Image: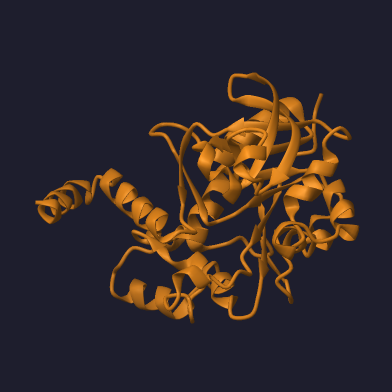
Length: 292
């Protein structure tokens, strides 16, 4: 059976980034760099690898720099060209005209509300969602998280979420799945609960920032009330889709870094720097010197 291809992705980037103040007072947290690429660039690169063509940014006040990052910087490029410098480093930041779209979330009513703000652009097509705070790094020689999910979607259709296992005591910080039968990296999803008490969590498999959803979720979000934290939760809307459409979880074959936390951000920076052939050796020596 063929399924509608995934060509659109929604990036909810309207958050205030308060955990990283004062760094995020004037700079969107999505533009904070992991080594030399901002977080949002990693997510967009992952989307492109998966064959996604249209990037939909759900922004808020003070977030226009995210859109500008993917614009052509004429003065910068002209100056670099005049000085004989390669423009290759800027290539990933260039978007095909019309493939970057911004919509505004005027009030911070939660992740579900942010996704609903993109309903007119998504239309009647299945779409992906990326939470840029979740940095998903492929294994060496492997493929990115969304590409793994798209390959599974082409086989199964329906709705898909990425999951990973965490220690049981951490589950109350995340959306958690009630798992059904598993086959390899694929698990049937029987239920979803947002930030459950540890004792009530149906598993230790948490939703980890990547989604492929059918457009019907927008109709659910249209009338959904507030959930955990007094916000309109995407998890609650997805839970209502279970039983109506196929719903599966894909365990990502790679490494995930929670860059919404300072420790996770530092860990990601260090891990990616160590993996770089142009600096890994120097960084390793630096770390050993600091630990001595």
